[in-house]
Image 1 (tube, rainbow, N blue to C red):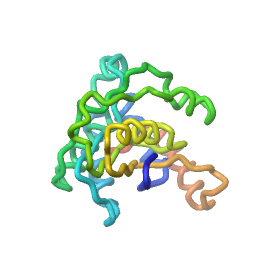
Image 2 (cartoon, rainbow, N blue to C red; image 1 turned 90 degrees about the vertical axis):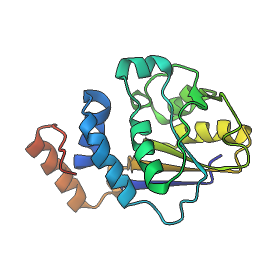
Image 3 (cartoon, rainbow, N blue to C red; image 1 turned 45 degrees about the vertical axis):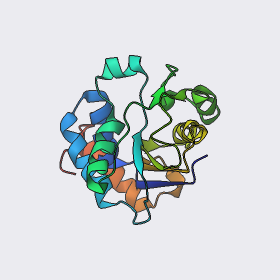
Length: 192
């Protein structure tokens, strides 16, 4: 249902460690450099009236205490001078984390998980959905379905990183990725 998705970087090495540090280790200081990376690589073709971060279910938000996609979307919204809608697209189903599932399970897991609380901000407007990592596209697609049903004129997606099949990665990048892991011993670097 989304028209286009931009993924800015491969989900590897220091970026992977930084995203995981933000999401799972509460290293909030990483939100600013991660958003700066996104802003630095924003495609010129992005044209949105309103920005929407992928929402977390209230139970996940209580456990994590923040939404990493919102932290990135807020900074991108300020840069683009576009409003960020934080409460109009909601996650109504407490799903299993997508990272624990296979592709087919991911699609099934998120079906009908997102609803629109208030359609007015989206009606006839171009909406940019922002998330941290793009794997199968299921999350942004399910968000886009809900937004289109609310009357959005167009929905595009922007993710900071994309998981990629290691067979498609040049050997040089895999070597850097492996070296970075052993050198950093799994600790996210803040010098992005």
